[in-house]
Amino acid sequence: MPNYVPVSKENHASKRWKRFDSYAFAQKETFLPLVAAELPKAVTAFPIAFIQQNDVFFPVALLGLEQGKNLFVAANGQWVGAYVPSALRGHPFKLAKSQDNQLVLCVDQDSGLITDGPEGEAFFDESGEPSEPVKQVLEFLQKIEANQQATARMCAVLAKHQVIKPWPITLKTPEGEKTINGLFQIDEQALNQLPGEAFLELRQAGALPMAYCQMLSMQHLATLGKLAEAHAQVASKMAQQNQPFQASIEFDDDMIKFQ
Image: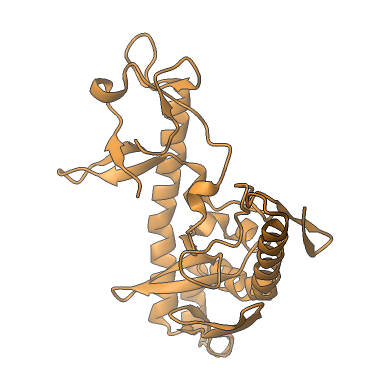
């Protein structure tokens, strides 16, 4: 489990951090939250669904067929796919709320990316201020946080007009059929039948692109089945050769192959 602690001079003045070069830390992420600003790119890579928590909907990238298995991460830590969700790109940093409800920059102490030097980026510069790389990470995470709020407002408008419906998914995999429950999709028929005022409210809220991106992304469901098959082939090959499970998986002209 991650061990996030606030970035501070007390804890990190003499420390450095390395940029990650492997997505192994995301191997168990079956779903990842998305924000509205990244949906036009996410729609090219994987299925997008909605998840409901406490009567609130939010979009997620669907990355696997079973809990704890991210099909977009190969055994060697390679990311398989055309787009990396923003939820991963800030690693090992994240924003978290302090006791006084303020957002503070935190870092995963157990990420293996915190060092005593000389490799990596400094947390603080010689004047004791956050280093430029840390400022850049903070700015990126702040943008994501701001867009999360905008995304929540869009989802609320979609839910208000009842254009989100359950999306049970059944896929064929090498182990047999897999059924995924708890996901939601846009109800295209309900969307098309909205009265003019409701449709206008969706457009003014910026929610229409989100709806269309989700529907368009559903074409990538077959990709999950192909990735599951590729992972199974890699595991079988490595077992036969009695080698560590380190082969890679890649796309080639809409085909998925392993090396």
